[in-house]
Each structure stands twice: as structure tokens, then as C-alpha cells.
Image (cartoon, rainbow, N blue to C red; front, side, top):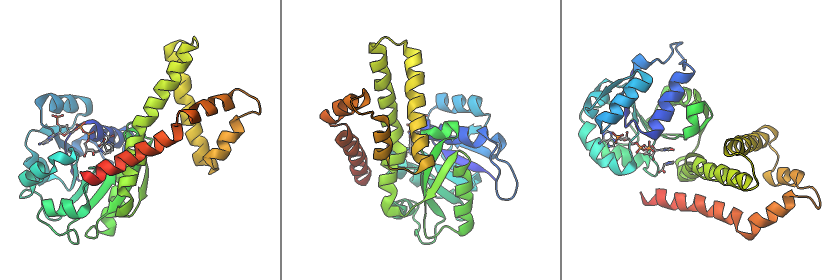
Length: 274
Ligand SMILES: NC(=O)C1=CN([C@@H]2O[C@H](COP(=O)(O)OP(=O)(O)OC[C@H]3O[C@@H](n4cnc5c(N)ncnc54)[C@H](OP(=O)(O)O)[C@@H]3O)[C@@H](O)[C@H]2O)C=CC1
Ligand SMILES: O=C(O)[C@@H]1CCC=N1
């Protein structure tokens, strides 16, 4: 089975890295290898970099990728979808499973760009995130009505090969794009800021990143494994009259939680506008 990628940027790199890292095994027992993958990108520099990094076939011709792919992952920015789909729509076999990872673009819109009906086109929207690179991705999956049960199972197998994958209805895709796709950027900012605070208090920078990242990863794991309310877990850390509650107050005074909510809301608004 050939898996084609149009666009070999940050997210395609994370997905390909994730697919090849653990030797993804599909339902028929075959493992995905570099020989099964082909990708195209705009510039020669990207194509060469990805061919070297992953040992995959690359081409400048999007139509070549579209023609050979059994599964075609569209990994260009939403703004480039009209141009790319116009270019490849004549080359895509009608039985090809098309997976879009673009923020904001609905199944109906993508199918229309291919001149197809979303009720018959084998099309799935996915919203992965860059932790896929280290096998810790979390991907929202929304199969179109034209996708078969086997398509959904295949897509889930691919996405689960680098982390969690969760099927959701399309009305939640913009929220998933924000809370799963974009939120790693916010978390990296938080880790950077926590570490800056520790550096200010005298800790060497490398050690500060290690502590901050490990604390964030451990806290996330605690939420996932215990299923306890995050506020409850926060209370566990705040000793009465202790140090943590002073930090909690400082965050509240600066609107930390409102800022995080507004960040998610801003992403959702942008996705709806795309
Ligand atoms: N980054 C993320 O965390 C996430 C991104 N996404 C989605 O993934 C998609 C890609 O985003 P991201 O990887 O961040 O973007 P990047 O800018 O990193 O990558 C875009 C890629 O598209 C290529 N490209 C641009 N125009 C064309 C074209 N006409 N033909 C072929 N390739 C082209 C670029 O080539 P070149 O490198 O040569 O310029 C580049 O490799 C978006 O739709 C985004 O919504 C979804 C979830 C998370
Ligand atoms: O910034 C973006 O548009 C993409 C979608 C989710 C994460 N990155």
C-alpha cells in the first residue's frame, strides 16, 4: 500500500516520523516502511531534506503522488488547498482514501474542491499534533459519510501508530484543532516561561527545561491516568499557607485561565474563518 503526502512540512514530518518510528503494522499484518511512502513539497530543499531524513521517495510533481497513492494525506496549509486540489483532482483515483489534516476545512468543502460529493468520496478529516514525533500524538478523526468502515479502521491504525486517535463528529473538529492541534504551542510557551522563572531563581537553563518539561508531562499523565478533576489535583499540590498557593494567586491575578480559554477560542474562531 502506498501512502502519499502532499506537503512535507512540520506536521507531515511528525506523522511520517511517527509512522516509521515504531514500524506501524496494519490490519493485514504488513508493516509500513519508507518504501511505502512518497511525498511532494514545494521546494527542492524540503524534498531533499525529507528524502535524507526518512529514506522516502520524493517528487516535485503532486500529480505523481496523487496517482500512485492508495492513501493520500493532504498536508499543505488550508490556504493552498484550492491550488493543490485543482492540480491533482484529475490524477486521484476515485477509490483513493483521501485524508486531510487541514484546520478549518470541512468535509463538504474538501469534497467540493475535488469536484466530488462528500457522501460518496472516501474522505476523512484528521487533526493530529506534533507530539506524534515522539509517539505521544493525539489525533481527532472525523470520517466522511463516503468513507467505509475499513477506511476508518485503516486511518485509526495509521494515527494510533504514533499516539491516541479519537473519532469525533465534525461539529467538534475546530475545538479539537485548538485543544489538541494547537495547544502544544501553548504548552511549550508555558514550559519556556516556567523554566525562565527557575533560571531567574538561579537554576542552569538546561536543567530548568528538564524540570519544567518533566513536571508538565507528569501532571498530564496524572490527569489521564487518574481521571480526577484537574482542579482537584491542583488542590493536592497547594499546601495550606504554603508556596504553591502564592503562585496560583499570581497566575489568577494575571488572568492565566482566562488567557488559556481565550487562546482556544481564538483558534476556533480562526478555523471557522479559514
Ligand atoms: N503544525 C501543526 O502542529 C499542525 C498542522 N496541521 C495542519 O497541517 C497542514 C500543514 O501544516 P504545517 O505542516 O504546520 O505547515 P508547513 O508550512 O510546515 O508545511 C507545509 C508544506 O506544504 C508544502 N507546500 C506548500 N505549497 C505546496 C504545493 N503547492 N504543493 C506541494 N507542497 C506544497 C510546503 O513545501 P516547502 O517546505 O517546500 O515550502 C511544506 O512542506 C495545515 O493544513 C495545518 O492546518 C494540523 C495539525 C497540527
Ligand atoms: O496553526 C495551525 O494552523 C495548525 C492547525 C493546528 C496546529 N497547527
